[in-house]
Amino acid sequence: MPADPPVAHAGRVTETEIEALRATYEPFTESVRRLVDVAIRTNADAATIAAAKEAVDRVVADLDASATDGPFGVRFSADGQPMAWGNVVIGVRNAVAPPLVVHHEADGSVWTEFELGAAYEGPAGHVHGGVCAMVLDHVLGATAHKPGKPAVTGTLTTRFRRGTRLGCPLRAEAHIDRVEGVKTFVVGRILDPEGVTVEAEGIFLYPRR
Amino acid sequence: MPADPPVAHAGRVTETEIEALRATYEPFTESVRRLVDVAIRTNADAATIAAAKEAVDRVVADLDASATDGPFGVRFSADGQPMAWGNVVIGVRNAVAPPLVVHHEADGSVWTEFELGAAYEGPAGHVHGGVCAMVLDHVLGATAHKPGKPAVTGTLTTRFRRGTRLGCPLRAEAHIDRVEGVKTFVVGRILDPEGVTVEAEGIFLYPRR
Image 1 (spheres, each protein chain N blue to C red):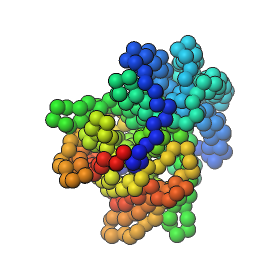
Image 2: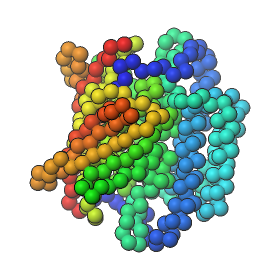
Image 3: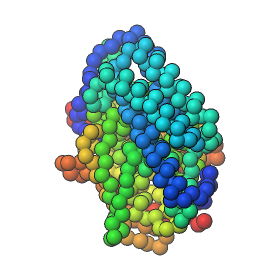
Image 4: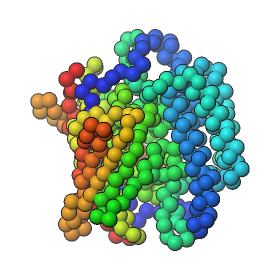
């Protein structure tokens, strides 16, 4: 993981500006998420798909006219809060992200509740094991971040107990097990309504800035 | 991982039908991928985004009229080839998938070359560590699958050596290290133009059917 990631398109926007941007982009991204999902599940005929492609291509052209080159990056609000809106796990402007909302408890533990649909499939009807690993990497890492001092993953070990079903309520949770020098040892898991499906241990580090 | 995944919407389609379906859906999915990407990068104003949302919502409604409930599943061609078109890593109908094309060598090793854009971001300008874990889970697993006998991940250990940049050529590769009873031990890695960024070891199992 990068010791000193470049901050792409850094800028300082006020709380009011952030809310206006969120009100503009969040519902649009939700619509794109629905499109990704239905594009997998539809049985539309070739003519309908061709018309859909044309409509999508027109939208792409409209949005591309004002697009920045390169990724969103991590931008900051005027009070220094990071806006990871392009993030693949939590980004409110990234249709690939479910997006997860990670809650932090006073004891340092974190949790998130979510549901995954057709876009996250691996084995038929089940969440791809790699998606489980991605969620756990993010959620375990969230315990280790400190203000102005993001942690990066050193090692992540994921143990798959059984399949995680698509289309049912899921929960991921993590807490710090111990700290040894520069290493923070974190444990966590994913649960479905019947119990634990995947467990993970991670070692997180604070890179020199 | 599921011992006996349900095969959703199983059906037998001929090679010719598969090619027709691919010709219809693959270019459309590519357009949806471009939309996901530009939706993150655009700086369009509220009116442009509102119009884009309306256009996307219309496409969603058109496609939803003929959509199957639930995920794509794994369908099969008439000669028994699996069509994992909804798969989050390789699915040609899944806009979340890059999609990876995994090549199998005669010695049993596998490799894939790909590039990841704005939709896969974690640390600014870099691939999310969880996406690296997802790619490695899939690519390592690909070494262990046998005809009619898919392998599932038991344990995956991912070691992050340094950041993996977005927007540059990447390669993932894996091979079987050894087989011990029911366990297949696989090693693999991701490389960028400067060398290895992430390494992984996986233990894969063959569930009873």
